[in-house]
Length: 96
Image 1 (cartoon, helix red, strand yellow):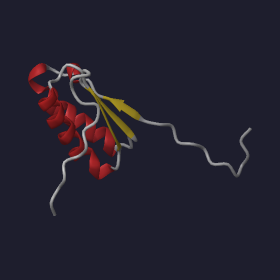
Image 2 (cartoon, rainbow, N blue to C red; image 1 turned 90 degrees about the vertical axis):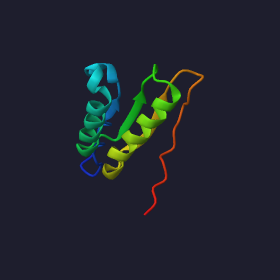
Image 3 (cartoon, rainbow, N blue to C red; image 1 turned 45 degrees about the vertical axis):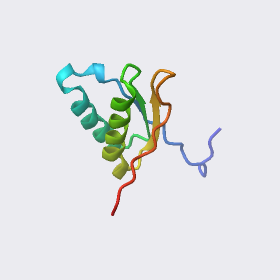
Image 4 (cartoon, rainbow, N blue to C red; image 1 turned 120 degrees about the vertical axis):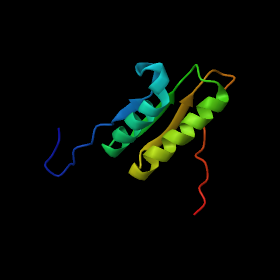
């Protein structure tokens, strides 16, 4: 039972990517827009789940996704590929 002093827990807002939800010729750009909107709207966790992307394309996509979501402090990043691919991609270092 919740007492008046106990705070309500915020629900977890969790985005799982799927570029197949967008037209093929727009999938990456539209998905990056969707990730940025989700992050700006309070999404706390973003999972990159693009199992059919080759490793280089997956790395590039994850880095781009992190760069659009980072200003909004969403948590990262689970990049799901095949076993031959990668399971986590650290963000690219940015020089200032």
